[in-house]
Image (cartoon, rainbow, N blue to C red; front, top):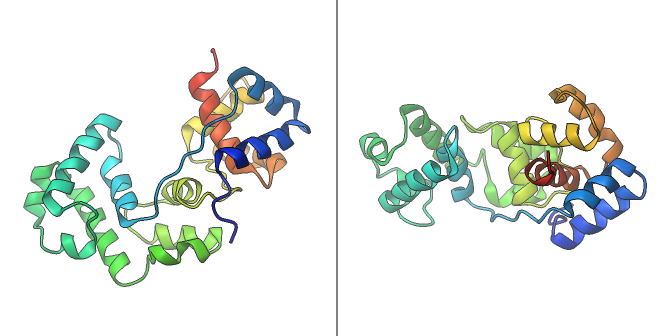
Length: 209
């Protein structure tokens, strides 16, 4: 499978190639430069962080994740959570819903429904199916994993608000495009849509608007 194709070198090469064909990409790069790589590991902990961090600020999520990690242990896995009662997780800051999501993550990893070690060898569609089998993890979570943990080059996270805003600004739209519109817009950038997603985030954060 086409993994680990989003290093800084890959991103620069892919966007430079697209810029030769698309003046709007070229103009965006002239304005904000190349986006940095986003590299995360491949682990149970990555999915745990996603669940803990849902609907929280970065600071609050880090605080609660730290409490959970102190409770369960660093580099914890599903077996470690089996010894921790729900009351202790609530005290650490997890809501009832997020505790259910964590339990679902542990169960699907334990029974092999989500085989983290096997994800690099799966197709994008198979990865989405495996990750979304976990209660609390959706398509956006799968896309973020494929981008940051696997470095897949043609992931297009249209469910991400900042990506849609960034894309709209790059191509000069007055209104933020819908998910469907962004899906259609992205067709022009295959097979390097992951690099464009990174550029959209970068543009959203750094362009002088």
